[in-house]
Length: 304
Ligand SMILES: Nc1nc2c(ncn2[C@@H]2O[C@H](COP(=O)(O)OP(=O)(O)OP(=O)(O)O)[C@@H](O)[C@H]2O)c(=O)[nH]1
Ligand SMILES: [Mg+2]
Image (cartoon, rainbow, N blue to C red; front, side, top):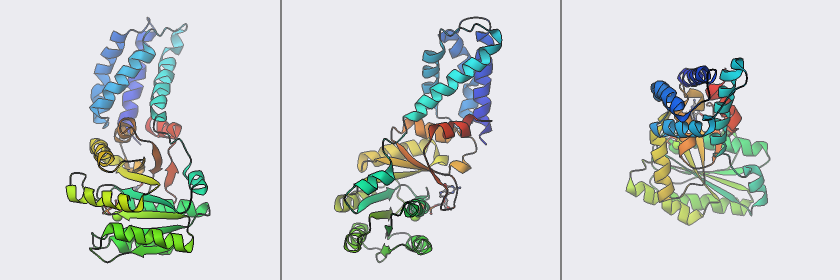
């Protein structure tokens, strides 16, 4: 449980509640209290940019606040803070339901998964395939990671577990050609979805970024999903910017939320990447993938 974040927000509510029980809240009061809890927020892995974002929002939402009953002051502040954060989290909500989108789209519906090394792309593909399968949508699983030893085998095991068709190429083969093979297979056999795994790549590696652009050019996916690891904080924000600039990112899957001990890292990513969050990963099993739901995130971050 993210203790630091809870500590910071409960201290914020308490201090502001104290002031409010005596007088109307002003912007200066909020600044002063924010200065006091800022360190705790930063210690909880909240990015500086997000600390300032919260400060601005709370100044807007809380200044001028008065209470009629002294005993309600802290509670009212707390509710306002929670509402404000929830409203910020709402920005990450997807406008559409993926299952519905796939069912309504011409077949096959093609999804490319991308991201830096080790964020959870391959595991996430297995989870998405499982979720689609539960909705009677069979995917062709494509290992366009022809680069790292063991990568294709790792994905193949998942495909076998789920009894789904699996397409791979030789090691060192052109990932775009392998991806295209997967699409052709789905077209021929009438599979409704193609899930394409790509090699982990540092966003700073020009050749690998060019390679993923080629995959996208060749298969023209319906959806380009960026997988981000909740534990990487500020770096995830940079990754999102780079991938978006190089390839374009339609939506994000945020993994390892279960392992984000402090909570501030996930909060910062969600509030700054400016992309919808399609799912969050909450463990290593196939059903540890849940839709992004602001009230649940809020509950996880600030709940009891
Ligand atoms: N706790 C937790 N672990 C996860 C989650 N998602 C993935 N993992 C773990 O993260 C590690 C890396 O996952 P992979 O799926 O291999 O990551 P990848 O992005 O495909 O890695 P590369 O192909 O090497 O770039 C594995 O040990 C996964 O089990 C999650 O939501 N929660
Ligand atoms: Mg992988």
